[in-house]
Image 1 (cartoon, rainbow, N blue to C red):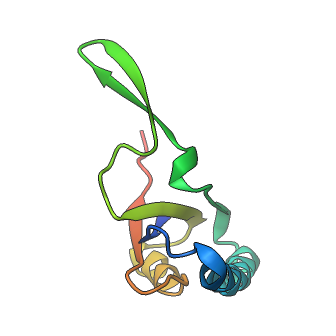
Image 2: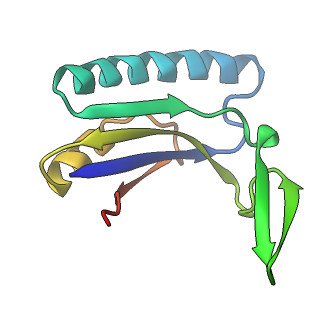
Length: 116
């Protein structure tokens, strides 16, 4: 079964010199986990995302669409990246999700992909 592991982290946590050092540490840990998931045959894809300042949101309302800079959600955390994995069950997906490196306040959402 395929699961999306969505990584949310506090906004601004990787800004400044201390943030850059924190980012390099976290990226190294992500690379190690991704390598392990690939070797286990679980990883389908994954990537970090550009900052929320690069996002554009399309809002549909009453049949018309408008474009807005940034993400639509009003939140202090941002979607920073994801893994798409294919594993036997939710327990296995959760085991991988628990190993995803995030800073304090970070969250990982685990969601199964819909099948139609």
